[in-house]
Length: 435
Ligand SMILES: Cc1ncc(COP(=O)(O)O)c(C=O)c1O
Image (tube, rainbow, N blue to C red; front, side, top):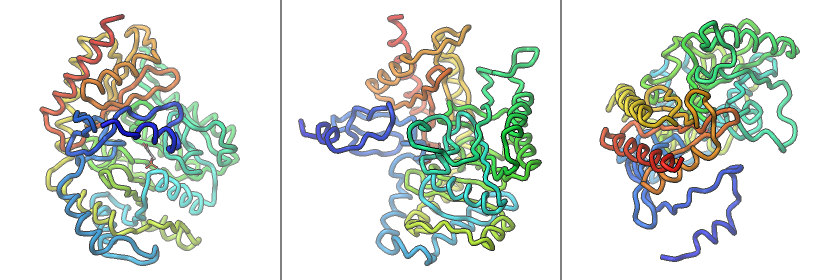
C-alpha cells in the first residue's frame, strides 16, 4: 500500500541518530527472534531490538504479565509502593552477591547511570568521574559527560571533572609488550598517572562497562577490572559497573562481573532487565545507601518504582531462571562464535571475532595484516544483510574497522543462528566479490 508513511516521517520526526539514518523498512510487528515488515518480509533480529529484547519479541509470559498488570495496577504517585516493586528489589538482590541488597527502580540506562553518579558524588563528597575513551553511558547530563564514543560536540560544557582513560583493545593494542600483545597494566598505570596529574584529588567514581558494546564490543582482559577497582579505591572513588547490555545472563553468567570476581560498589542494569520494556535499576550495598539517604539523596522521577514494568522485571527473572538462560547464552554463544570463526576462514575481511556469550563483535577490515579499516565495508554488508532478511548493527568509530554487534535473543534457536550466519556469509560474499 503506497501511503504517506515516509513523507510523514520525513516531515514530522526529529532525527535523533547523529549521522545515522532510519532503517528503510516499516515494521508492523515482531515476534520471537524476528521483526516483520509492512511488505511482508521477516527480518532476523540479531540486535534484540536495541540490545534489550533478551527473551525475543512479545514473549508470551511478558505479554501475559503486561496484560494482567496494566489492568490492575499500572502507575502510581512516586512515593507509593506496590508488591511488584518490592518483590523485584528483593529478587534482584537474591541474584547478586553481598553486599548488594538495595535497589532503585527506574526507566532507562542513562537514568540509572545518572542516579548512580549522583549517588557516588553525594556519598564521597567528591565530583570527578573517570570512564573509558570509547564509553557509552547514555544521553542525560552526567551519563553523557561520562560518554566519549560519540555526541560530545556542540552541546556546551560537559560536567566538570570528567576524565577519559584509554580503552583496552587486544585487537588494536596501543601499549604493547615484547610480543606485540596488549600490555594493559602499563596502559592502566599510564592512564592513572595522567589522571593524577590532572585531578584535583576529588575522584567520586570510575564508571565502566565490563564489555564495551557501542565502543566496538571490547571485552576487558581478565584481571583488568580488579586492577581498575584497586586504582579507583586507592583514590577514594567508588566503582560503578554499567551492565546495561551484559547483565541478566547475556554473557553466559548472570552478571559479567562474575567472571572477574570483582564486586563493584554500584551496579546499574537497564536494557536487558525489561527485555524490551523500559525498566532500569541501580543496585548497591546498605552502607552506601545509608550514607546517601542521610545526606538527602534525591532521585524522584515520574516513573520511579512503577508497578507495570516492575512486574515485567519479575517475569523476566522467572523466565531467565526457569529456562536457565545463562547456560543457554553460553552454549549459543559458543556455537555462534564457532560459526563466525568459520566465516573468518572464508572471508579475509573478517579481522576479528570477540565478545562473550551472546554479545559478540565481528570487526571487518580491508586487509587482515595491516588491519586497515573501511568506512564503507560495514555499511555495505549491513545493507546487503537487510535485503537478505537479517538486521545487523555496525559500529563505526575512528581508528577501527566496522564492528558488527551481534546480540541475538537468549531464546534463539540453533536454526535461527544458522540462518543469521548463512545470510551474513552471503552478504559478505556479495559485497566483496566486486573487490
Ligand atoms: C552500556 C550502556 N549504558 C547505558 C546506555 C544508555 O541506555 P538508554 O539508552 O536506555 O538510556 C546504553 C545504551 O546503549 C549502553 O549500551
